[in-house]
Image 1 (cartoon, rainbow, N blue to C red):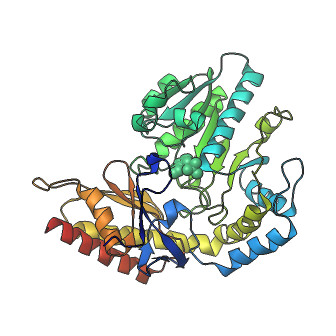
Image 2 (cartoon, protein in one colour; image 1 turned 30 degrees about the horizontal axis):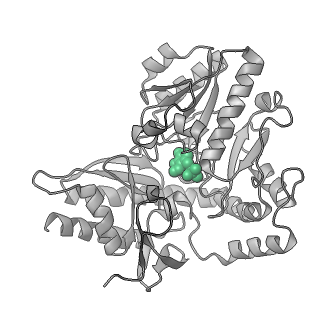
Image 3 (cartoon, protein in one colour; image 1 turned 30 degrees about the vertical axis):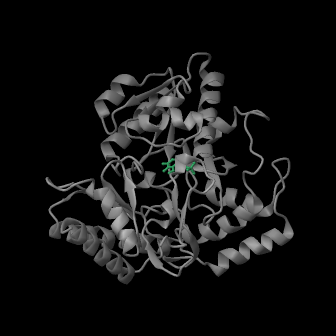
Length: 404
Ligand code: PLP
């Protein structure tokens, strides 16, 4: 019998596949499907629900704001929106925030701002953008053009011209390539969808240097890594990267759609009314929730706690690796970590893919990154006990698959 909690052939585009689990509610790090099965969510709805499910405080902030005003448009503004902009610009040298609704939109805005700056400061022909192999920046045309995986984009070609891909963490190629004709470099500090590779400090230093020397706008895509996921308010702090622009989204409004593109004064100065905009960006309800999120996510004792939890998560992965030969390199940083799962000779199928399904069957949700990396991005409120529980189930699931 097909359980009610699995929905087949929903009227969604086939690009989402045709099988969905129907979830009902969540509390803390757990989520329940409509038949009452409980799951420990080690993926946070793809790095979004960082303060967990079922938050009365966030729900109240949204409800209170909805009663006051739901939408103003960008012709006007709201107190909640102003407060979020103030909080975000208080970090680093940011002069302004462009609000959007998703990570890809935050990157579209960044690309446009960089090109507007390059054209108005340096003149015609300075539009080229550098992105990196295995990068993921989103699925709208500009951001997709900066995304590496051909699977996502090849049949949509031609996309936005002027994007070049360089090998990630390759200082020599970067230095040889970048000159003043480029508008921007867009980069992730940890390649969230591309196998959780971390930027080296040497590469961050080289990026800082070449961008400053050539007046090329350095865009850090922190859609997945930002807002304390790595134990730093922005993951750029992990490796001392000094971006001109930071893009944020996923956890910003606790699960409501909101993104931010933080820009410096030198870009803000060249912008003119009408250069960019968004009907829903900076929505007061999303911002009322974001205000509460940021109060927690930027609170220093909370940040220290996340750093300690990140170390515990690493220890748990190391223990797992010690038990299973099929586990390869440990990847990521802070609370965005993972491990390679190599399919042993003689195993029929793809062990990493099967492991994700087996974990789910056993009540733990995990994510994939790249081809064979199991990605863990738990809610930042998770306890050590809950991590222990999760790893017990991951180990049991791996055993089940290997002994099948
Ligand atoms: N950039 C990065 C680094 C991401 O991880 C993602 C989504 O996974 C995006 C951009 C796109 O965000 P969205 O799906 O909200 O458009």
